[in-house]
Length: 255
Image 1 (cartoon, rainbow, N blue to C red):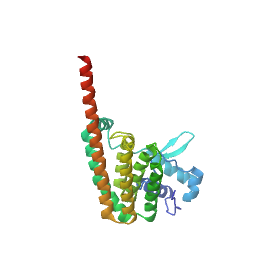
Image 2: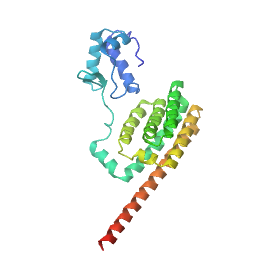
Image 3: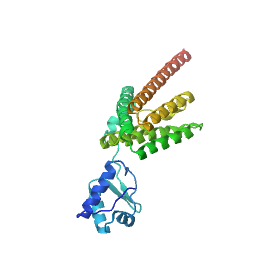
Image 4: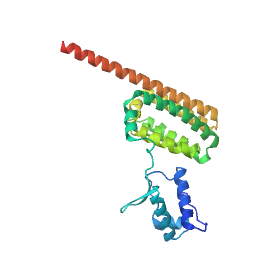
């Protein structure tokens, strides 16, 4: 973790500000455990009493939380953008899924463009590393690893866009996606032809970002999201047809 020596006069407040920035920039993530008090005070170059004062302040404001016999963790601040009632509506209405994909198309086109333009060399290496893992997972029969890496790939691009509001908003949206609120990504990845298309699309996105071509990165994301929307429409149609056929069969049996 990139903790730095503290040199400010009010040591505890300087510790607070540094940890706040690490959370704000997404470097410290929800659920992540902080180093031990001894290690963290050494890294920051402050006394343990100053560190305890800072941690108490952050806990009081809901940014850190303590777990008995486990340590201090970044609080789970994701998912708070939507009430449970609204999440329930999202999961049960096709209109919400369509709007979600359209929202992702617009937002991620912007993040890919920004990542190609503003991402650091480290950011681009992280994106490339996730894509390399996707290529390896693509060779497996079980699509679950590749489906999980799909989310990680997109989040790496969002992180590389260097917009903290966009980062936390999209992380919240992705938590809902990972939990299957909008659609089941693994169902989509089970189709081998679809998996091949998705990998090619992710390759095009990665290539454009690595080449630092913002326009190509935007276009690649838009094409990818258009494909997802089309695939989901086909799945929904197939599901409806299957339901109709089942009803017809039940009707014939009941005659």
